[in-house]
Amino acid sequence: MGSVSAECEAKAERASVPQYAIPANGLWSTTRVHCVEMVLITDRASVELQRLRYENLALPRQGVRLSVDGVDHLSMSIDSAHLGDSVFRRDNSPLLIVEARLSPRLANRVLDFEAGGAIGARRGFTLGWRSPEPADVDA
Image (cartoon, rainbow, N blue to C red; front, side):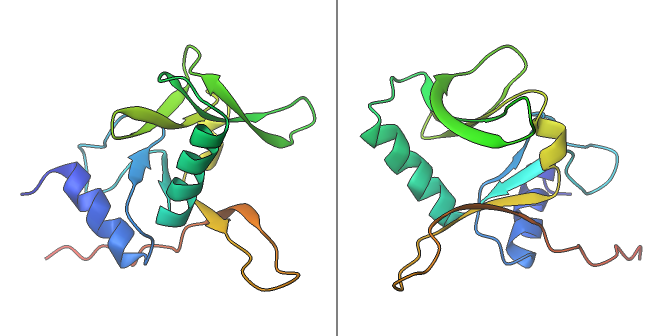
């Protein structure tokens, strides 16, 4: 039997979502073949997060922090991880830091970035729902 992380990556491929299947709580489930508290980061979102880090002169231990304000609005800033935060890394650098109280709410979500190539098209990050998995069939 393969590793659970390899199985999670395979699920991301089946869901037609590019790589970076990352568990928000840092734990992989070992009881069945599924991941716990997972947010998927698309390649487009990953590239944009890296661009934001670079353009905002993020220090080596800083990443793009996704947090929630007092009225439940999402915000992004360049910051270091705080106690309990989930840190998503790329090339050993923090790419996305998710505020601890927000992590459970991102289960089964996909962080993507719409480039808005056409005139008047929307540009920015989107946080959508992941496609449902087909039911597991026990052989």
